[in-house]
Amino acid sequence: MVKNNKIFSFGILVALLMVMVLSVQVSAKTDYEKMYSQNVKKWTRAQEVKNVFSVSALFWNPELVQAWVAKYGNENLLSMEEQNAYHRDFIQRERFNRYLVFEVTIKKIKGPALYPINFAKNTYLIDDQGKKYYPLEFPRGFEDKIFDQVTGKIYFSRYGKDDQPIIGPETKKITLHFSRLSIDPSYVAEVIELTWENPYIPPDYTQASWQPELEEEILRLEERVLQLEAEKKELIENQKLIESEIETVKKKIEELKSTANQ
Image (cartoon, rainbow, N blue to C red; front, side):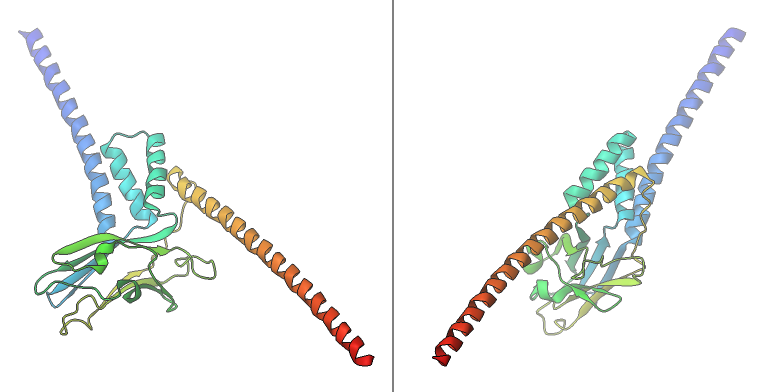
C-alpha cells in the first residue's frame, strides 16, 4: 500500500512538473505576442473624419520588426541562427532596409465610396524641419474607389536629397499627411495628419538581431560609392568635351583674327 502511494505521489509530481513546463512555455509565447501587440499599438496612428471615413498607419521601424521576428521565431520554434536568418530575409523581402514603410488602411465608415484624388501628390511625409517627401511606391488600390476599405504598404525613401537619413537622432517627429480622400463636397477638404514623436530608434549592433541592418547599410553605402564613381566618370567625360570645344573655339578665334589682319 505504501509502495502504491509512493508511485501515485511520484505520478502526481511528474504531472505537476509537466503542467509547470507547459505553463512556462505558454507564458513565454504569450509574452512574445504581448510584446508584438504592444509595439503595434505604440507605432500605430489613426484618425477618423466625422464618422465617415478613417485612416490608420503602422510605422514598420526596427523596433516593430524585431518584435515581429521574435514572435514568429517563438511560434515556429526557430533556433537563434534560424531566427537571425529569417530576420535578414524578412527585412530584404519587405525592403525595410531601403525604405520607410507605413502599412496604411483607409476605411469608409458610411456614405458614398471614397475616391482619393491624385493620391501620389496629396500624400506625403513631413519631417520636423517642414521638408516633404512623396511616396515612391504604393498599391494601386489607393487610387481607385474605396467601397469598404483598402490596406497596403506605402514606401518612402529613407534618405533625402542631401543623402542624409530622413529620420535621425535629432528628429523630433514625422507626420504622414493625407488629403482629398473623398470627392464628396462636404469632406473633400478634410485633412488627415498622423504624427509619430521621437521616431528614431538607435541601433545596438552588439545584438545579433541588428546585424542584418548593419549589413544592409554597408551595402547601401557601397552602392552609393558606385553611383558617385559613375557620376564622376560622366563629369570627367563632360569636362573633356568642354575642353575640346574650348580649343576649337580658340582656334576659330585665331583664324578670324588672322583673316582680319590680311
